[in-house]
Length: 319
Image (cartoon, rainbow, N blue to C red; front, side):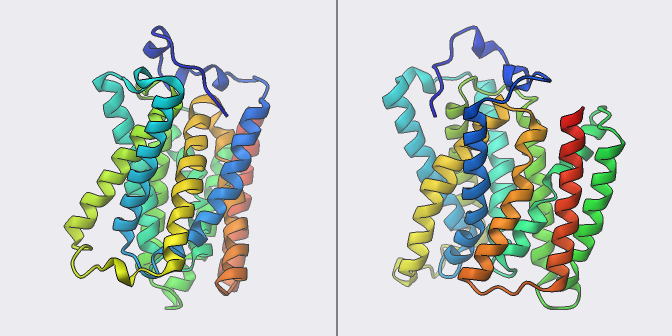
């Protein structure tokens, strides 16, 4: 999947005006390919994260993951499109950094922290509330999403209530559940903002700066939390290193770049459909690989949340 180098005129347009967001535009094969990558790969990253945090600190591992991925992507851009493709103005750099911090420090790294205390499948099901948060943000900004979308939000909130039961009855730590809900909200704000801020016209350049900002932000939080104290690389298992490498290459370099491209190319309501595919993949992998229990609150709550997301997306696409 390649993108032509941005021309000077296109640099003056924001991602909100991307042609792919026009209502009724035919969805291209490249969009479906990118969606497929996000569907499958991101569904598997919850398992990867759970394995990484077995022997690595959460924010430190997340920071390392995104700094390395950001540097690799920047090098690839410079080689394929020339160093000029990385040159952007301060406003667009600031916007990319802000979105990267919201998505990767607020969204992803909090999920990494939460997975030290809750199952990967539960985390993925809680993150499935992202489309509901996007509807709330749209309404708060003055848009009118429609009754179907609000019904989906209400249904999703019921599902979230059921999903919190394992934390309320002591089966998992309630703090981990709260962290993932907060992460989903921050991820939604980042995704929502990306279409309304003056982002770099080249989505791959935007993705590189987002990952670098998110990675450096994660490392800063790790230092503040003191995660480096007593940390010894020799204590990291080969299993965790392998999972981290998978997250860097597939979860970040490939899937996050595909997601950033989709945010600038496809309708947000279509992009948000990953939120009801990822949990299914994550729950299945968590049960098969890690032996995570599929309890009735997780099964019922997950089904309700996914149902709410389906209602939101189907309503949005009809509109």
